[in-house]
Amino acid sequence: MYTAVLFLHSWLRWIVLIAGVLVVARAWQGNKSGAIFGPRDRRAGLIFVSSMDLQFVLGLVMYLFLSPITAAAFENFGGAMKDGVLRFFAVEHTILAVAALAMAHIGNARAKRAPNDRARFKQMALFFTISLVLLLIAIPWPGRTMGRALFRFSGV
Image (cartoon, rainbow, N blue to C red; front, top):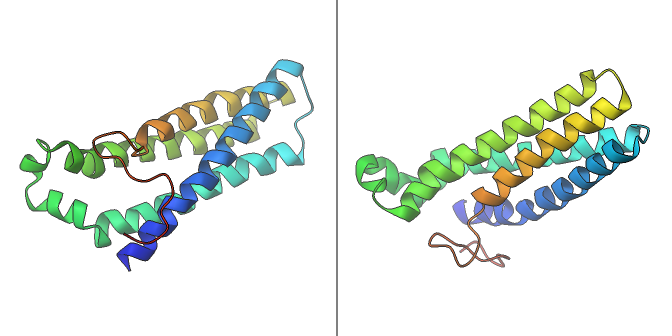
């Protein structure tokens, strides 16, 4: 079960990142150009936030129930804080992901309530950019101590 959820979590990151880059680019462009905020813009934000929600649920299931990494960290949390890999997955990855998710939801909500199109784009641009940067920091990119493969072709 862990390998299947890890596989899905690994591949869903690409959907989240692509959706994030597209919506951030559109939001900055709309903010700069004074474009009309339409259904496609609202849908782009919704796709980004919804894909992040699904990614978070998968991550939470692994974190709380399935991951041998977090299980090892919970056995000796003080010791885990001295191990960079355990600390990353038990604390840093999780906190950054929660913060990114919060920023995306705040941006989406503020865009809905903004008084005009330019303000909607501005809220999305600001909060979705922060969210995307936090996500990029949270990902265990290859080459980092805790790095993982860019593309996972099996659960391991």
